[in-house]
Image (cartoon, rainbow, N blue to C red; front, side, top):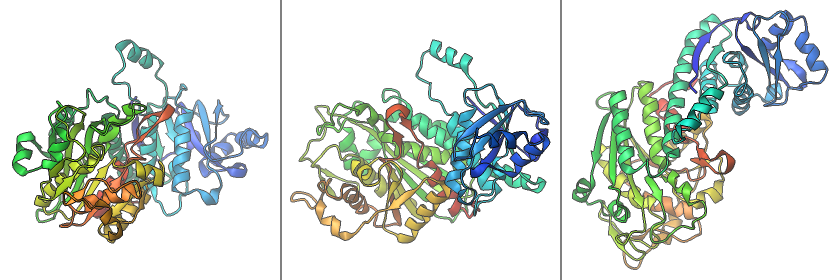
Length: 506
């Protein structure tokens, strides 16, 4: 369901809403908004807390009805944890808990006073932006592929927040709040777009579909777009990219998006996203179990499209180019084989030892193509290696770079956006694992340091610019009961763009 947001400055006890959200710290200490409600209620909330119904543990909640002295129907108390430990992540946890607590109830018109909480080093704009992002994330549903009857039943049962008023402490905070809200909603919009693309089945989200989505995005948001077809790639000599695509009936596409809102002489930032819309592994066929999750192998491409949606909605004053090589990796009779040698657009030759190491084969030609834009920096984003999941789990994306200052910038963007990455080594010591007797390089370097040798492979095609690689294999989607795309790293990439555009992050 969609949520309507607004920014106001008001008193919690005077709100005529279905519900007012206020916070409680551990040891039953009331936040300033909760204290105001309690005072109007003649100590009613304090009395409930004293009876032991809530301690204030982070993420806990308690819904109260018909609180005396208030004009709202309900008051939701949200646990904030220890006051001195209320940092960025704890704040997001509390906000998420508040939205989830009302997700299946009758409170549709809600006023939240959580943006008034003191989060160290963060101002009103950041708190409002995060509140909007978390609320939108919690409200996200993917039911596009469900039947009409199922959708109709869901709509009848639809409950939760429809209108969310975010209160700020002072009237002179309203402008900062509005700025934070517009930023948060733009990032949330980009994340939702990336999630939708990732969650679509591979018989719908084909390379052609991704190209159509890019064209629609460009038309709606005033971006420039170009779609290169197989014949165009043949003329460019993209033998590596075309090698991967040759086993599929789906035609490959090279999508090129441009956001030109910076100064004319400003070099663009380039984002390159891996767009394998389904990855069987090719002739080096993957095991059947969980292969359905290989529809997520285009989440790098989805994150580029999501980021461009976000920066376009913010009208960010920056020049940016998005390059998306997209195809399927299938085991057709025409598919590439282990032992084949491909000639990349750069002229470097590649011995294919494993056809399931295909992401780097399409990215390398896209990186060479990026040279024509004379970019200020290039960041590629890819669900590249299972080895990165083993190394970092599902919490941090792997970050590799040929420029330490660029790496630090991306790490900081990830910290600010709470979409974190971890700087991995890219030492020359690893390069000889890619040695081949029959070509300039092999496409794999063995099991040891698999995510690093994959990055080493890409680095050979990124020598003409500052470059970073984000391996999002562990962060782009969740498995199990909560199976679905996460939309990461759209927040990190958008924050990186904001920083480059010279915008304040708070």
